[in-house]
Length: 295
Length: 235
Image (cartoon, rainbow over all chains, first blue to last red; front, side, top):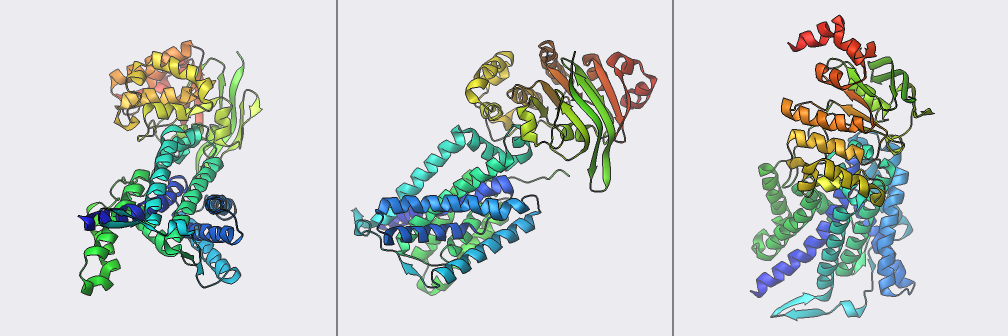
């Protein structure tokens, strides 16, 4: 029973972070048909901003807030400087641009900060654990669960109640008709990047708090996982991104927890085998739909 | 009557292919104008160019102000909008969300919304239902209602009867007749030639990307060329 509880806590904690990252990718994909591989670097940037805030002696909560805002602002700057000039280019150009931005930022982090990981001193308040029955849940994990769930609830309210939220959901189906509704394309894309960056910022802070360090390549692994998540969930499906996040976490943690020791080196490979099985059964992802292009 | 829309020498090219060539169209205030033509004649491209969705050459003025080269969203804010071919509702959004998305100022649009709910009971009954679950005829009514949410002076409508059963086409044209009676100006692309010529005041006929005929709806209805090219093909 305690094993199950620990498993659920781990899945909800990791899945929440994956969901936030995948939603960030999915929101941008909705308006630009771009998988932004520089999304991981927004996470890293937020991690460095958190570190800078702590080193400067700013109160921890203010450093967290600043780190999340840095993620959002950096995403908007990324959109206006790197993606806007190639917005009408084909999908491959957009994708290559996102790789270039990711590489550029990694090199900047390596050369201007350090190639090695930097320890992030998290206040001792967050380092303990809470006992639930016989299971131990770390405070950071509990925070991660609460923050990711609250972020998802806030985001759902935004998508369900605001005109910009409707526009982003609608753009996933038909961007051109959203413009016919009087929505300025540039504004909508900037809003999507801002949301995406804020989500990367939140995920970055949670990730750094769990690891206790930040390094230039920190965003690489989680953004790859988030990419897998949006593909499983169905490209262009926002709810698919959230459910896909929890599903991938469930697969990863299950393999981590119950895979016999001898098979442990094959864990990542097995994860991807399961992903391939899901995609064989649902080629457009669990919640995606067939995309037909009108010529 | 004053001129609302004046299109002069409009041309549209896709790659090397010219879809519309030197076409000129005029819509006066309060007028319903039909744009006829077979598939591939350039009718939809003409509407999309007028509303700024695709690049074009030539001059387009709306209420005497040039809107050539102006972004689509700014043209819509000036009071000209398009009900696109195939309705293109947002299927995952509810009817309420589809309509309110088109309202630039939510509070100001509330009275338009209420009036539309009264005019089209389907909107009131199913406002919280995803638009993708409606039938084709219902979707067309919602698409027209959605365009009205931006409180346009001129409505461009692309193939309102496409894919609809005759009784549903009747319902769509009943709505358009009501809107015309309210003074709304319209430019309608339609392949149901008799239907639209019975509804419109004036009409243009297009073929191979250019305007080949224009006149009052009655003139075109009686024209031997129209009977030969369009009505003959329908029989």
